[in-house]
Amino acid sequence: MRTRVAACVAALLMTTAACGGGGEADTPGWETSELRAASSPVGLGDTVAVVNGRTSDLELEVLDAETGKVRFSRPWSAAPSYPRFNVGSPVLFDGIVIGIQPRGLLQELVAWDSETGKELWTADVSETFGPFTCGELVCSEDDWSLDVAALVARDPATGETRWTSRGSQTFVYNTPELLVESLLNEPVLRSIDLANGQERWRVDLRTTMGPETRPVVSEAQMAEGTLLVESNANPEAGNTTLGIDATNGSVKWRRDGFSVCPQPKPDVAIVCSSTSGLQRLNPQTGEPVWAVTQFAYPESAGPLLGFTLDTEKLLVNETAEKLVAVAIEDGEVSEPPGGLSFMRFISGESGKKNADAPPGEYIGPLDPVPYNARTRRPAEITDPSDVPDSVGFELAGTRIFMNANGGLQGIPAE
Image (tube, rainbow, N blue to C red):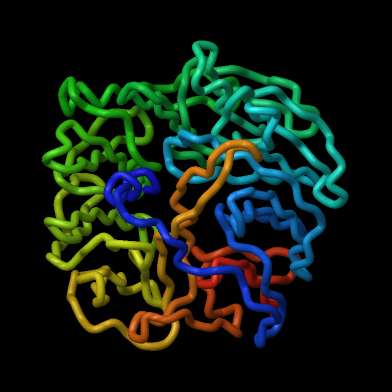
């Protein structure tokens, strides 16, 4: 999703949609005041970790989940050509946080004790897109710009290499059950066995879309066992969404002229186009369940796509100045409700690879944040029951989520 949005709004002025927090929160719990999330936050046990983009000198911030207090900070390094146009995210294991930091003009993978910030191990990765979990291991796509590029899986406690998958690649879908990597220079997807790094299946999208097909341009989404993947074989015709069988990589269907849009809830396949509107598809066949003409990409930093608190309606830009609600069940269009909803924002982030590098532009995290679609202003949450399961996470008795100020907020779960 992030790269697809980047491709569609590459010429936009990516100003920040929201600034850092503004002091003590009026609601129970805590709220950050000196942090603007440049990555999606991650949480485990009593630890929260996020990349802070308050300045272009990015920092990893590790916080206590119950109090919101920062335990320690470390420099963060963003790959200048990240294929999904974000700065990457830290990963957490029991007592360990793993991230990337500058090593001269290059980068290194580093593990720290999540309580004290003590360095546990480092790995020379030359250039990487950032770590991610591979089941019980930590993976990174090392040396991505070199001939020796590879996906490498390491023991999170020791940094010892467990397996290696050769080739310059980056993941487009990752769960404990399924890892799908995309080759960076070819429109080829590969499913990787998390236990040993062996290839389970491979699909070359040129077989379906033709020889001019470009590499995959967004993270895939899953709906009823079908991966929704986005690529392009003709820039003048817009992108294409493909439905791929997650068990064997076979292409089940294609929907030309449409991009993958964020799912409002599990197993709902939504595609969108600034010229053709919004559609809900049957994940098995690719046929439209309904179609509406309303949908516009934001012309500058601002709301992209949201959903109501009951997750029964999408919130869609009809124009740059007007939102409408679209019923997920039947596509009925109505005025947006007042009160609490959730919205994903395009927000420009400026981040450096190292202290001497020029800042690069990245699309910020697309996490849903509390929003009033009728007034087009941030909404306040005081009750943890008002946070859907798909928004944020719960740790140490605290419900934690991003707010529309770009910071993090935690409220007691009971």
